[in-house]
Image (cartoon, rainbow over all chains, first blue to last red):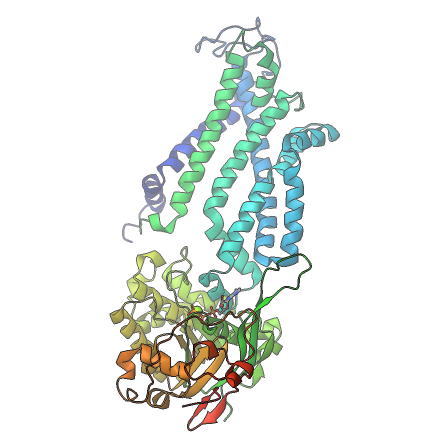
Length: 285
Length: 323
Ligand SMILES: Nc1ncnc2c1ncn2[C@@H]1O[C@H](COP(=O)(O)OP(=O)(O)OP(=O)(O)O)[C@@H](O)[C@H]1O
Ligand SMILES: [Mg+2]
């Protein structure tokens, strides 16, 4: 309680102690975001430009550090340029899926009865559709652009979150502290968003990290199938374009794959650490 | 003077999951025609074994679940006739303390926020007044001011129950419903919490509806005691009368099962009937007296006809053959 000199530093240190994985995840995510930002400094170098011979091996230093792809495009530039679209598609898609999933699941779990039946039939309908096929149909119906791809992925990825949110709301709804809040005059909105949601947060945060992961992999899969936006570089796009030649040259597939892996790892570490930090039982106070 | 709380013919049923799509859905009749009154500053104990419907009565009195029949009048107005806004305003006067202090406090809020929540929710006072009120409540229930920023898991069971009591007192209620407030606590803590409740009742003129299956606790606090069995009140009398002259066979059995209490004055009178067997199912309860299956005095009349609560001496008893 004393030493209020630098609360942010104190918070940071306490976060390092209670949720080290959050700090590591955050750091890794910052690296990935820095990549995305760095693409601004590519001086107008177009990732689609052919700059050299195809399939030049990575040297890690010099002008073509990561080599070139099957067309002779600079892989380092592709990777940097692809970071921002990949991450923003994943973020928007995950955001949409979480908002839809939590909102529908919360309403179903909290109110129960007819509304629950209705919403859960609706959710099941989406869940039995093969998600990738459904996404493919949606993307082909709309013209593929980062926005439509993000919305499509968000739209097919929400059902598991909805089911989880419903189960949590159903479980917490009748706990005594929620009844106590009702006795103290809390309305449905307050109960759902201020009392139940914070207590349902841990599994939902884990689910959010899974949804981000799903979104990145979905985007990669769509690009891999050639359903991505051909004018936007993304990591999935690089993998999709180079997959046929992977036996001749591993690096055009391996580097974006590694980038996806690191991002997914970073996000799940972040989620895990966030849960620890939010858990009052690990509070340093 | 009209009673503060007047419960008449309260009925609560829980629909059960049906066996088939078109089969009639059975319902569990948890409370079957319970009536009692409670005056300002008085304490009524509600005693019965597990599943008797005590919690259900407590929650229905607070309108925290929906009664299917009967009325609950508080200060002359039927709570179930109030609209949402009026009911919210009324919540100031009715508060509840739950049995399990480990589940009745939001684990993600700090103690002071928990105690202040009813003031925030009902918009009572300005922030400074609320903070002062919370500080006063902390002192009144025996918590230290420096514990205000701790989370529930940093308290012992007894301290948590003090937080729950402070929260219930925050709005200055006139009726406090306590659902087995001490049954999760050890002997010494139990005594402290009971003393605290008794003191609060005297200080604030609170009416207490005190639910328990612990006759000792009820005896310490209550002026009147209602014994419940399978959703009905089977005996309702003053405390001393009940312990001195239990009239319903079930009451006698309860007292006999708590020897330290029964020994005092009622030893000679309490027939030593050990309670064998289980109460019948509250789904589709039997037509006659629900206790008939376990009663040493049961006759065919008992199995056929349900006895109503009627005056016997100074008590009110629902038995065809009261003792
Ligand atoms: N929400 C509910 N849904 C369905 N049945 C319920 C519900 N709440 C209670 N019941 C049933 O109602 C009956 C009375 O329950 P209640 O909780 O009121 O008993 P109690 O007297 O408080 O028991 P205990 O001493 O164990 O707390 C029980 O048979 C119980 O199974
Ligand atoms: Mg109970």
